Length: 201
Image (cartoon, rainbow, N blue to C red):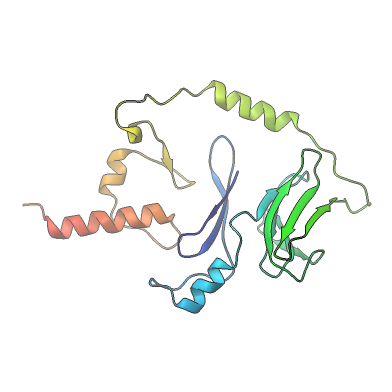
């Protein structure tokens, strides 16, 4: 499962499903400097579409559209990326995969392009929909609806991709690095601010 973030920078994280163990974390474009973000830097951040990622049929490969109009073929296992300029010249504004494995690319010029992803031998990758469907079905059957009343966060499992954070953990954490998720950095900063304002006797 791939998640795009845009909290001061264009983050991209990939997690196994349903365990939600993080296997890839990177920044699209340049990493963001400290807040507040300079106007020119903010313009670079906004140049990246928020709908620019898609899994194709090749296992472990994530496709990413860029502001330059190229497509990045990202190997989730080792983090390496290969650039393809098949639709270069106008920013990629949208990217998705069809049920049969083709990539659909929309760009800033108003064009819609359908691409077939081929193997080294020139044949299309076989599409196996059964395995992911089975994983999703198993996940759904093991979950239950959150009650309408009460505190939502009592039912939410928060993870940073490495470990799960209980409400008690979140209320006491005071350290975080730039490599940690934004929510964890903010929670640590808030807890530190509260501790400074209301020191324990």
